Image 1: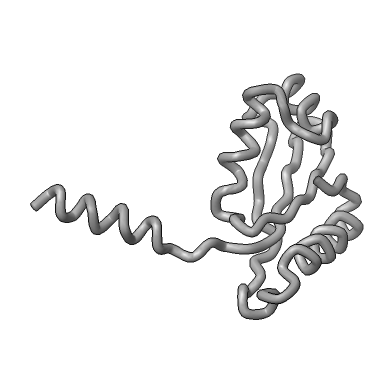
Image 2: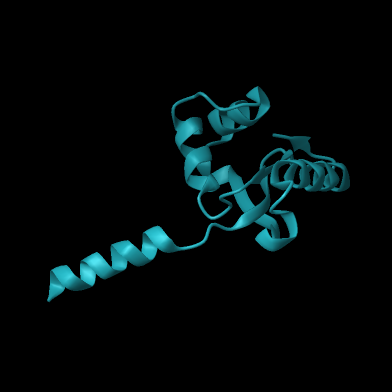
Length: 111
């Protein structure tokens, strides 16, 4: 019975809808802010932390903040979730437009 429950959980995880939206990374030590967009907002933090740990993140200012202050100094936050039905035709353009809006509003670096 346990394997049936596990299979059902795996299937449900694979079929879940991705969250589309805008996120911010804040360095609590320096006050720097980076804003990005992602069609997989619910998974982007894991990807970013992975690239930062490998010392392969862009922009270099984000990597420098990670290297100098550590993981605990960076705070990830979701700024905006976007309904898929509202951007199905021009998802990339909409995400970039919203990212640029938030970067300007927060005085942040767009990533």
